[in-house]
Image (cartoon, helix red, strand yellow):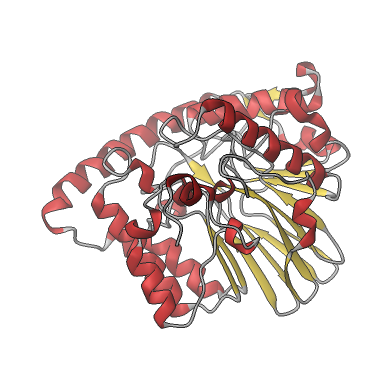
Length: 373
C-alpha cells in the first residue's frame, strides 16, 4: 500500500479469502482501504452472493486531496465490478451510495443476477425512498416497466421492530431528559413517514419477481446446505435515527455462520448487540461507531453505548474472524476512541481486524497521518 493510493489489480481480493469449511468470504473493499464501502463476496458450493456493491469517496475531512479520494473510489469500483463477475446473487442492505451502485454507472454489476434488496416501500426514509426508485428504474431500463400501485393495505407503525426492551429500559441519568426528547421527536418523524408509506405509490413486488428482484426484509431461503436469512429492518444508528433502516444478512452452512450487520453504527442499540451474541457467529463483520462525527452526529453517551456493546459481544461470542471496519475507519483516532475494546480483546485473546489488516496492510488513514501501530 502506497502512502496515498493502492497499487493493486481489480482482482487482488481473490488471493486471501476469509475461509472456514466450505464458506469463503472475500473482502472486496472497506473504508480502511481509502474509500467508503463494505462490499464482500460470499461463496459456498451452492451460492455466490455479492453484498452491498457500492462505494463513495471519503468525506471532506479525510486527510487526502480530492484527486486521490476520487482515484481510490474508482479503484474500489473496479474491484466491485470484477467481483460481480463471480456472483449469481446480489444483496443490497439499504440505498446509500456506499452500499449500492447506480446502474447508469456500472449496470454490468447486476446483469443476470438475482437481487435481494431492501424493501423500498416501508421502513425507509424519504431520501432512500427516492434513491430506491432511481435505482430500480435504472436497473430495469424502462420506467413504465416498474408498476407503482396505490392498491395496498395500509401500514401501521405499531410493530415489534420498535420493541427494544433493553435499550428502552436503560437509565441515562442527567441525559435521560434529552433522550426522551429525542425519542419523542423520532416518533413524530416516524408518523410522518408512515403517512408517506401509506400514500404511496408503492413499488409492486410481485411485478419485480419476473426481473429476479425480491424484497429481502425478514425473508429467508435455502440453497442446498446453505441457509440465508435477512433480518427485519434495523435502525441505521441510534433509535429513530434519521438515516433510516438497514437489513442485515446471516448465512449458515453446516457449522459455520456469518453475520454481516450493515450500518448499525456500532451497534449503538443494546438489543442489537444481544441479537449478535445470541447468534454466535463464526465470522462477524461490523461497521463500528462513526467516531469521525463525534460531537456532531454522535455524542459521547452513544459512543459509550457502542463501546459497551462491543465489549458485550467480545464477552459472549467467539468468532474465528472479527472484522470491524467501515464508519470507524474514517477517523485517524479510531483506535484511541474505542481503546477499551481493543484492550479487552487483547486480554481475552481475541483479534479484531480491519479489512486492510486482513490483507496484512496498515489502514490507509493511519499511513496518511503517521499513526501506524
